[in-house]
Amino acid sequence: MRFPPFSLLIGLAGLAFSCSGQSQPTPVKSGTYRATLQTKGGQLPFGLAIEPGKQANTYAVFAINGTERLAMDSATVTGDSIRIPMALFDSELVAKIDGSKLTGTWRRHRTAQQTLTLPFQAELGPTYRFVPDAKSAKNTVAGTWATEFSNKRNQVDTVNAVGVFKQSGNRVSGTFLTPTGDYRYLDGNAVGDSLFLSCFDGSHLFLFKAKHDPATKMLTGGFWAGISGYESWVAKADPTAKLPDPATLTYLKPGSKTLTVSFPEPSGNVVSLTDPRYKGKVTVVQIMGSWCPNCMDETNFLSPWYKKNRQRGVEILGLSFERSAEMNESGPKIERMKQRFKIDYPIVLAGTNDKAKAAKALPDLNAVVAFPTTIILDKAGKVRQIYTGFSGPGTGKYYDQYVDEFNRLIDKLLAES
Image (cartoon, rainbow, N blue to C red; front, top):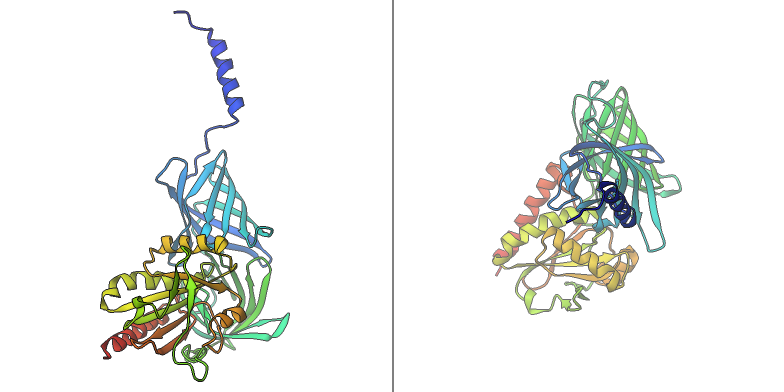
C-alpha cells in the first residue's frame, strides 16, 4: 500500500483544523483565586475556588465569603474562555484564561432586553481580601453596632440595622441584620482607622467602607450595592442593639384567622391550603423568590428540616413571587431552585416580587414587608405566627436563636390536640 507524502498529511490536518474552527480548550488552573469586580465604590473582592469537574472541560466553582463556600453552577471552557453561570440568579462570570489569571465580565440578565455588567478579574494564589494579612489595624471593630442606613436620593428611606462583627488580626467577618433580612456573609479587613467589607454570591454585590473613630465609638461610611446602588451609613458600638420583633411587622387583617391561597405549581397543578395534604397538619408557609439569597438561606434550612420532620405531621408550602408572573418564564426558575436545594414540598408561582402586588395576592395580610416571610399555621389552619425576614447562618447566634425558637413553636403546635 502506498501512503501520501508526510507534507500532504500535515496540509490535510491543517485544513481540517481550519475548517472546524476549533482548538483544544485552555485548561484552568485549580485552586483558590482572589477575584474582584470593579464597582462604583471601587474594587469588590471575593474568593473563588475552582476545581476539576466531573466531565471534560467542566469545573466546579465556589464563591467564598467568610466561612461560606457557595456552589455556583458547573463552569465550562470553550477555547480560551471560561463561563461560570449562576442560573438561579440569572447571572454569570465570563473570562479569558491567561495562565494564573482570569479577565472578563460579570453579567446579570434582568430582562430579555437588559443585561447589567461589571469588569471582573481573578488571580490564583492570593488569600487576602482587601489588603495582605501583614497590614495592621489600629483598633478592633468586634462586637455589636447600632446602625442606620440612609439613601440620599430618598431621605425617608432610612433603615435601622444591627452590625455584628468578629475580628482576628486585621481580618473582619460578620454581617448586618435588618428588619427584612441580613446582608449574608461579609468578609474584609480593618486597616488603620478604616473598615472594608464585601460579599459576592452571584446575586448580591455588597461593598462597605467606613472610618472608625474609637473616641466616639462610631463608624461612618458608604455602602455600594449592585451596579449603581449607594447608601451612607453610621454605626455606634452598642452591645444592647436589637431589631424590632420580627413577629410584629406582618400580621393578619382584623377578622382574618387563616391564610387563603390557591396558586399553580410549574406543572400546572393548583395547590390550596384546603387540600387534604394540609388537613390536620402544622403547616409552614414560606413567602419567597428564587432570586432572593435570603430566601435561599431559609430554604437551605427548611428543605432538610422537612425531610427530617415530615413524618411528625408537618407540611411546608412555598409561595414564590418572581420577577415575572408568566409561568413559562418563572416556572423553570422555580424548578431549578427545587433541584438545587432538593426540595420535596410544593412551590407555587404566587405572583411578582413587587411587595404591593404580593400583598394583593395575599389579602389576609396587612402587607408583605420582606422576602422571605414565614407563616406558621396550627393543625386547625389558624395562623399562629408570622415571622418577617430571616436571620441566616451568616448572623451566627441570631441564626441559632431563630432555629431554636422555630423548633420550639413547631413542637408546641404538634403537641396540641
